[in-house]
Amino acid sequence: MQKEPMLEVTYKKLSEELENLKTNERGNIAAIIDEARAQGDLKENAEYHAAKDEQGLMEARINELTDLVGRAHVIEPSKLAHERISFGTTVKMVDQDTDEEVVYTIVGGTESNPSTGLISIQSPMAKVLLGKEEDDEVTLVLPSGKKTYDIESVSYVEIVLG
Image 1 (tube, rainbow, N blue to C red):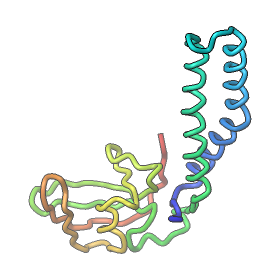
Image 2 (image 1 turned 90 degrees about the vertical axis):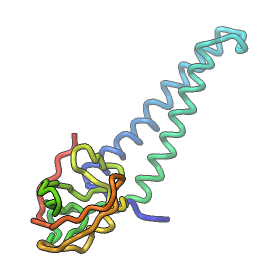
Image 3 (image 1 turned 180 degrees about the horizontal axis):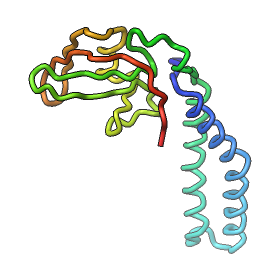
Image 4 (image 1 turned 45 degrees about the horizontal axis):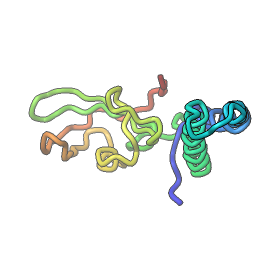
C-alpha cells in the first residue's frame, strides 16, 4: 500500500467530504430510493433508477475517499529545510535555450494542478527534480522534446489551494 503524500488542508477536506457522504448523503439517497420504490412498478420508475445510479456513484466516491484517507501521509512543508527539492518546494527554473522562466511547486497527486504550477510528486518531472539544488542543471523529457533547465531558486512558498 503506497502512501499518498498530501497537505494537511487536503487531508481535512477529503476527511470532511467522506464523513458527510457517510453520515448525511447515504441517508438522503436511501430516503429518495424508498420514496421512489413506494411509487410502484420499478421497471419504468425513472426516479428510482436515477437514485440507484446516484447511489452507485456516491458509494464509488466513498470507496475512493476511504482509500485516499487511509493511505494519506500528511506532510507540513513549512517544517522542511527546502535546501534540496522535496515535497512542498517551489522551484524556479530557466530554460537554457529560450531563457523562459518556469515555476513549479511539488505537491501530492490530489492537489496537483499543472496549469497553476502545482505538479504531483509522482509525476516524471517531479521525480527528476527531487533532491536537486539551486544552480543544478536538469534535463527533462517533455512532450515537446528534451529541455535543459538551470535551477535558479529552491524555496518554500506557502501553498494556497483553490
